[in-house]
Image (cartoon, rainbow, N blue to C red; front, side, top):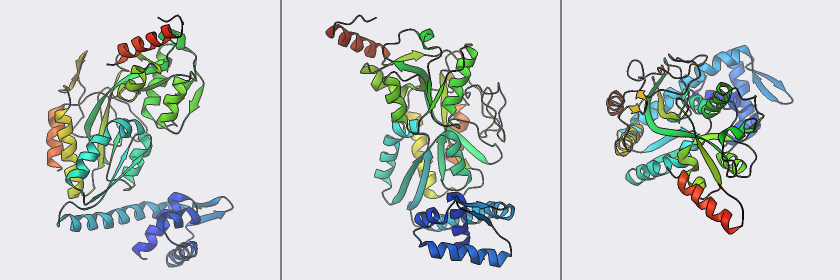
Length: 368
């Protein structure tokens, strides 16, 4: 059994077809097919069910996939460990939620790239569950997410504090007029979606129609056009609100605050590029305004055991830890302990309303 065969097997298992796996690996399809057949011959077991829609894993294939992920991950970590002895170079794969990638990461990544131009930096985006899956599968060295994680597999450190707001088309003045409006959200696995659904339930609103979108831009554009409502970080929509393109509705506690975390696997080798990235993140957090581990309204929750997935007041999920009210937004851990762990490992709404009012007067409309 060759390590290269395991890489090919893993690619086919994750992509679902030989064609997609070959394209991802840069191989010809016949080579991929031959290596899968050779691996099945070596093991004496069929690893895939073949059908006209692609290939799905057999029970033996599912078992092998777990081992293949660990073996390939260890081989990649060994290569990173050797290369990092020469200096900060080699690949660094970061995964992130779309909202974080759009607003929080450009400055951080640009500063990192200026200091360490030899590091092959890459960024992929998805909802929190997808980001977590990439980290767990060794497809990303670290990830930015908002949701829960399995405590026994993940270390996490706070990265960014977000004020969360309800957004609607600009003409909707009162929040209660939005009851029953369609909710524009990402697919299941988006943490902001779960908070929005909980908030509407707690207000005893009738269950609204769900409209799923694939990109952040599509959600913001749909809200601006009057298609429905959404729940997003203020940092994402502040510019559009300032321009009068949509309206921001503040939310009460505990729905109005979410913390984005940077997560890595507990068993992962921390390469020099990753350690330096985490130092950059720590510096950015130090420079950020204000948060000393509390939000208005009371002391923050703490991450149990220093850095883990159990957050007091935070969401619990199947396969993940959580010690507070199930489904509520994440609490805020103690910042000093987070900083030490990291070192060891290496409002615009009023302006928008005024601008919209001026625009309305110019058009002869009645505005609030």
